[in-house]
Length: 493
Image (tube, rainbow, N blue to C red; front, side):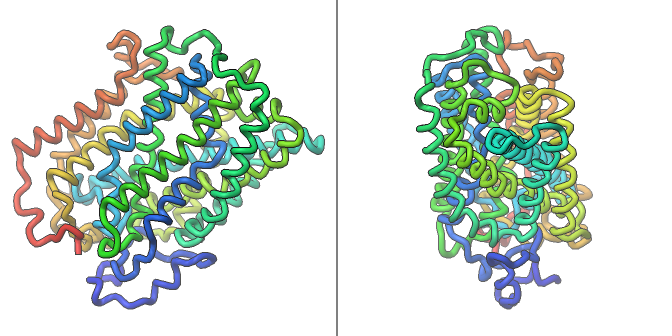
């Protein structure tokens, strides 16, 4: 048995020094023994607030304005979407402290030890996509701001250099891991927070809460507004697979489930809503909306705010980009266990940069981001719902962390092996829900066969969750899982 999967009483303190600022974290998706979990709900709150104070998240407040909504309509869609998304992912906030590992590995208790690779792949897609957006927005702000301030070039070469600067800082911090990421948020939050407040002051003279393009993206107000809500739901859902990266460091003997869930949800809501409000506010000052929020932001910024804007671009890379690159490294390691976390982090970093260039070059930003969000939502929605049902109904919050690590150690069998590593009770509903979602999704890059089934409304997310979750509950009723929770405590120890 490896050190990572030994009972807590047999584990020494050799790894404790690793999870500190400035030290490269050695643990990947291994089980973190209870005695070595020294994080707090406050740390988690700061990670998800600071990680969202970035231009790559701000653009999700700008998107509803580009859809034809005004400021208050955009704010309302963001708030409603965030609340719905957070309600759906509450069980996901508790998996990490129960299992001592990240959420995709934990999902093996529901999907099977091989079936969990579906969750790892989903998380990897989310992480790479959002990391690419972080590098793109911060790099563009850096180049455009420097052009206005110092007259530096604003050509393809300049943008390549700008993207590279942001990418290097993101990868460098992500390689250090959890301890360094948590410590940096204590500096990022106050600085980025002040910069956002100063930004509101800078753009306030041109603000018009009633300004809108007058042309709704989906033809009418309600379909467009509900589409904006769907985009907003994607924010919390994108974190559902990765919150375990941080909650696995929480000692369940010191902190309650309520403390952990509140810290995660409050941090995500505060960070996402603050940046969405900033994006909608600043976009409501633009006389004309171009396909690039960052370009409009820099062009419309007062001269005195350009330096703070450059700082915000760099801080955004520290926050959002690092969280996603760190998550992507863990996810790829769970798919290819023979690689170390540092190796997988470097691989996914390279993929994220390629995705970023393709997204910028192949199509415009609005189409890329909206299409990515609604498509990933159609798959993430049923995955999150099935995991939530698995946590509440099938497992009743009880997990065997040693059994969850068997596949990563090259071993078969065990409590969560099911049928050759696949639990078809959960996998088939996931595939059904995802298929229904993808068949009904609305986006600008391709037309799904059943996109207009609801008269222009995008029902892909609720429909995919309803089908996936309903089919899983039905499967549990017809084909019950017996004896799988015997002898396992609620804390998984």
